[in-house]
Image (cartoon, rainbow over all chains, first blue to last red; front, top):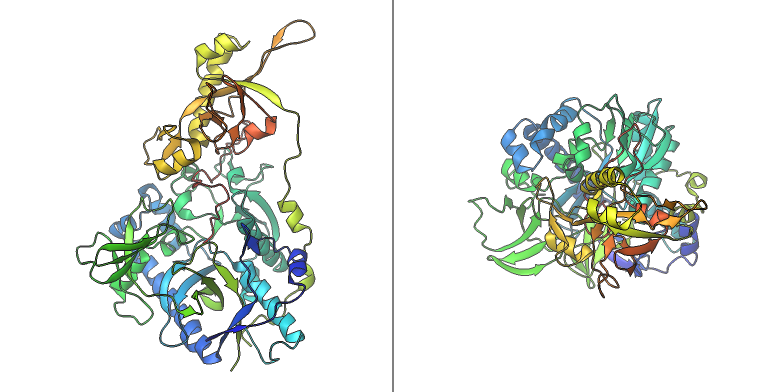
Length: 385
Length: 195
């Protein structure tokens, strides 16, 4: 695993416009960065990332099965009690899922360590599945990269295949909140994939959902919604007033409601409890666990948090650094500090994608600080050797 | 090969996406509103009768509860709406929400026949707000449920495009209950909910 500088494609901004990649620069800062790329060997990809990702995913599913049947664990995950049935039924019925992204710390040697599981609303999907794929094609065409260069990225192919597998006659609706180019862009990309797989699709904002007299979710034209993809976290949905309609409505959700358990950071201490010492896991505890003594260096994370908000690093109980944010009301977990590898002055994080439990590729994010945040840069990668 | 073998580039091209995303508000003429905080205030300052004021007030209170932004932290709420402008949610679910400040009524005018006309907008409740450029010189500041500030132009009055006060609030009632999700808007409306 090495970081290599490379000349940017002279026309990439124009291509970005052509393909609707509107958020390559956010708040004036570079988000897509093709001034360098990461190179992995095939062995690193297959042995250290592909296989372990699938294994971690299976361990997580094993836990979901335990958690939905155990009130104490459901409480630990802060699933609101009035929705236990809804979450449990979604799991027992085998409601299908689409995708997830594991965030891993990996430096090219030794086992990759799971930092967290973004199983409910992972983004940077377009950039991974399409945009870095296009970058590789272009750079190989320009002969700036070896023609044997490959990429660990069958994400788009697998997403389309998964949508095809789930294909039904009705309309598959897609939804997200207003006012974010990034979320809207991600949803647009998934709409493209679903269409390619033969689905009829439609879009509405998450606050436009209605409920009719028959307890069906409906769109703005009062049409019942049978299939709905939402890029909005279950942890929020289950706490909002509109959630009272969930149990009686017949809508099939992507991601399914059991993802509220899978994407929960309570999963990290539970994984360590069920699979102690697993090479891809870091020691983790609930912050209020009497077994946790605070000795050494730990990362404190809220049960619900995204984009690196409200994360602090502690040493022997003393706070060394903390990122701001609105999360934390539901409690915290402690995870053993495992610094991201540093390349130059960049802290590098691997996002490992799964589609229906199968490894589907990686994305590489870089940050100037040890905690990867919303504004981390996205860099392409290749496999060579 | 570890990457997608084929991607349909033609299907991926959408030079128009950026422009559909940027679909902005076309400017509309502004309307002048007065914000009334209760039934009495409504009777004194508008042309509505007692029953109209009562109905509007009740609706506005309900809408305020339903559509107001919720925050995990009081400080996040106050960062948006200003100091002392936030309180516990009425159902005490642990969130904080801005204080209800009343509902807008179009300023009373006289129509061609000499009758006084005005109309209430109880579906777009207003919340206490003291951000930049508002809530000083005796003018109370107001914001919509999503924290969209209204520019005060007098005591308890503001002017805005009719669309602007509706931003983020629920559409007019219809047989279908339409609230959807999204009420847990965590400070900053352009926060991504992906991760």
